[in-house]
Image 1 (cartoon, helix red, strand yellow):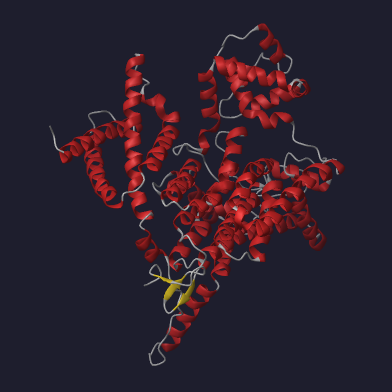
Image 2: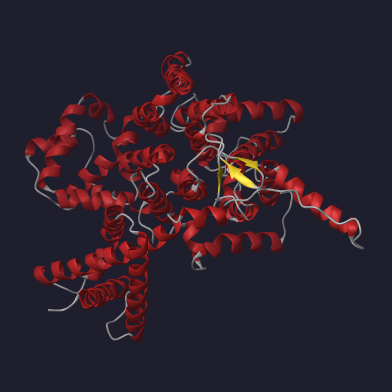
Length: 627
C-alpha cells in the first residue's frame, strides 16, 4: 500500500502526462518534439506548487471544477477535429478525445486554483489594491522646492480629479484617429442611417431608430452651424467619443470611490486610451459603440447601487439613462434587459423603494418608444429573418449535408426558397447569403407559417443533432473560442456614396498611415498583448470573474455581470456572423470591470479615519487600508 504523499505524487505525474498530451495536440506538435518534455516538467512542478497552496487556503473545488469543464468544452468544441484528423477507428478517436479532455480539465482546474489563491487572499489583495490617497507634501527648504511643489500639485490634482483626467486621457489618445478619419468612419450601415436622416429612405429599426435620431440630432446641429455635411457628421462623431470617454471616466470614478490605487487606475485608463481598437471604434459611426458605453455605465451603476446603503440621485440617473440606452440602441438589448429584469427585481428586493421605480420606468419608456411611438412614426421593423439566423443556418446545414427529408418537409422549405443554388450559397460562418436567398424568395410565407417551421426545425434537430451542433458551433465560435483570429478595427474612411460625405483627413502622410497600420496589426503579432484582441478571451475573463465572485461567496456582485451575460446569450441566440467584434464590443469594453469587480472590497466605498480605511456601514477601522 502506498502512503498518501506517494499517491499524490503519482496523481500529479498522471495529470501532468495527460495535460502534456493535450498541450501537444493543441499546439500541433509531434510526440517526439523536445518541447513536450519541457511542457511535462513545467506542468508537473506547477501542479505540485498549486497543490501546496490549495492545502493552505482550502478553497472550493466545485466552482473550480465546473469552470474548468466549461473552459475545456469551449476550447475543444472548435479544436477537437485537429486532434483526431488522422484516426479512422471510432474507439481510438473516442479514447484520444477523452484523454485530451481530462488533460485540459486538469490544466484549467489547477490554473484556476492558482488564480483563486490570490484573488481570495483578501487581506493581501486589499493591501495591494487600496490606498489612502493622501496629499503629497513638498519641502519649502529644498533647492528644488518649486519643482517639487509643481510635481506634488500635479499629482494631487490627478488624484482629486481622477475621472476628469481619465476622460481627457482617452480623448487625447483617440483624437489623432478623429483627425485622420475625419469626419468619422462610415460603413454601409452608417450610410444607410444618414440616408434615413436626410429623408432619402424611410426610417427603419433595422438600425435602431433612436440611435439614428441621436445621430440626426447632432448632424443637424453641425449642419445648421456650418452648412457643411462633412463637418456636420463630425459633430456626432465627437459626441460619440465624449460618450465613450465619459463611460470610462464614470468607471474610473467608481473605482476611485473604492480607494483603488492610482497605479491600477492608470493601467486601466491606459487600456482604454492606448489600445488602438478603442480609438478606431470611438470614431466609427455604429450603434454598437454608444451601446457598449451604456453597458459599462449600467454595470457601474449596478455596482454602486449594490454596495450603497443610501442611494443617491446621480447613480439612479445613470442607472435609468444607461438602461434606456441598452433597451433602445440595439435590438437584442431590449430582449436581454427583459431577461435580466426578474434577477434585478430579486437582487434589489431590499432596496425596492429606491431601485424599482427607475427600473419600471426604463421598461415603460422603452416599451412606449418601441411599439406605439414607432408605429405612429411609421418606422419599419427589421424583417423576421434577422431574428432566426441560427435556426435558418441549422436547417440549411441539414440540407447541404444531403440528409433525408420527407416530401412534406421539402415542400414546406421550397415554399420559401429556391434550393437550386443553396449548396453554393451556404456559408457556415456567415448567414447573410441565406438571408438574401429567403428575401429573394417568399419570406411572407415563412412569417405566416411560423408554427410549421418551428416544428420542422425541432424535428430535424431530433434526427440530425450532430449537424445542428456543428452548424451552431461554426456560427457562434468567435464569441467564446479564445483562439479565433479576426482582424479588428480595420475599417477606415467613408464608404462610397453620392450623399456628399467623403473621407476628409485633417492629418495624413506616410508616417500616420503606416503608424495606424502597425498599431492595428500588432494585435495579431504580439503574444499576450494579442489576447486583448480576442472576443473569446473576453468571454473567458467574464466567466472567470463570475467564478471568483462565487469562490469568495460575494453573491450580491453577480448582479453586476447580469447585463453582459444576458446580452451575450442574445448574441449567441441570433448572431448572423461567427466573428463580428462589434457585436460584443460591450464585453471587450467592460473587461477591466469584470476583473476589478470580482476583487473589490465587499462593502460601501469607505472613508478615512486616522490613516485607516473605515467602512461606511460599521464605522470600524479595517486593516485593508494600512500602508
